[in-house]
Image: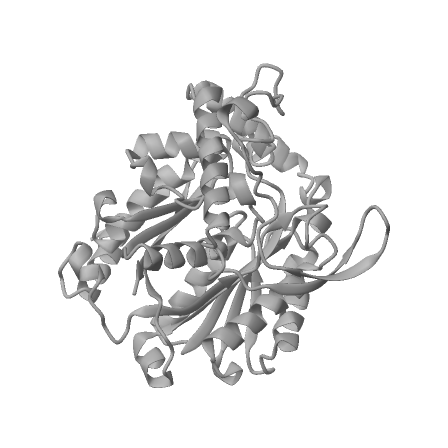
Length: 417
């Protein structure tokens, strides 16, 4: 039996040998459940509400909000995994400090990890795996990024001669905008289709924000902010995404100049925004949640991580989603909502089309084009967005996914309760 077949057998065994949506919605004591999922607002890099706030401070604020909303005793949290891409040293030191200042005792261990754009999801999956193995009983998976302070040329490592002289290795550091532009041309993804997808993202996000649909998932954070015009430092409360541009249309997007090639199709309006933000998810087994009186809002079912060619980074969700669905024993038709990260409209459009997914199931409240993609945060942010929307619409099964820098894709299956 291959390793893939063994994993599939283990999943089937967990659901009593049954497969399909009905099996997923059954409840078992050893289910890995979510009892709280919160995020900060996402703000514009360099000029938004969090431009003067350190990543670790954002993380501490969200940690405090999770403790307050869930009512969890901080002493019960045994491990915290934080995904982040840009900070020096991986953020390990300041994230441990953030946990302590948020109220977790010294007994709560902390680690940082970096799997590029999927770092937040990987952190949550790492915690889920630790819970499944019995290594811990309660944990938190999180993600954070201050792209204001750490995004730029300095975030890219210089390659040695050994790496530069290997074609696929050298391709790992081709700028994502450039490779996405090349992919759009190679796969015949028109600018019109990209702009239509982007306009829809803005419009859905604008409508959702106006209706207050993000309020339940966002933890308001009080921060210091310096007015760029007057230089005056103020204390402000950031409680909503500030990158959502109102009134965006296909026509208005059509006027924006291409960013990576004179005759290109990718521009600032149909690619993800550079943003700051944090998110955290509290996980434990169902039996533990019931014993502690924790309100269960959803459960983790399965995840996948796949590799693709570095220059085809954007196709990651196309490869990863079917694997996660197979592990869960369901098909794409069983899924009510897909949260697929909008790194670029080009890659998202291609993946959705190739997978044959109904567009109305994709990012119903908009996505990273409309409100931002703080690299390490996104994978954790998607969980709060997904579970909140599944509950609001009385739906059950959701998938989160993203393409990953250097050529990977990740996906996970979730069930709302």
